[in-house]
Length: 115
Image (cartoon, rainbow, N blue to C red; front, side):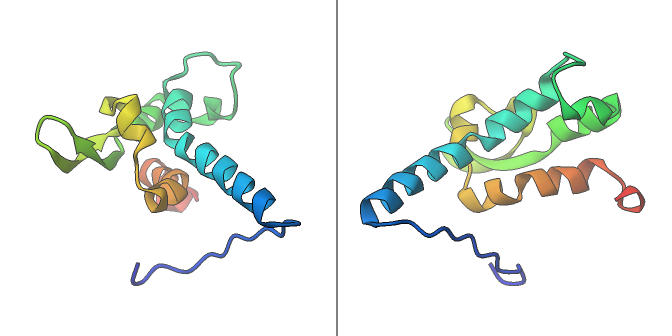
């Protein structure tokens, strides 16, 4: 993407088979990030984890963050609020968008002067 800084992720393996297995493992794991982010924002359990530091307004804003996902009714890619996305839509978010998701949500919900 023009204007984006390049980030290299690397890992040395002992052979092609191991590399392929790890690639599948990593791909599976990253596909679940949008589901995990939404679940964390929707969690009402104060003991669950690190999101307890967010205010109710910040959680609400996080759930309003939009992702471009496929809409089955319109048969097009459309911006949709994180809270309104189906599991299928979240599992099919573009990998580049997933890599930036947490950072983009933080920028969306926390004022710049607080970062």
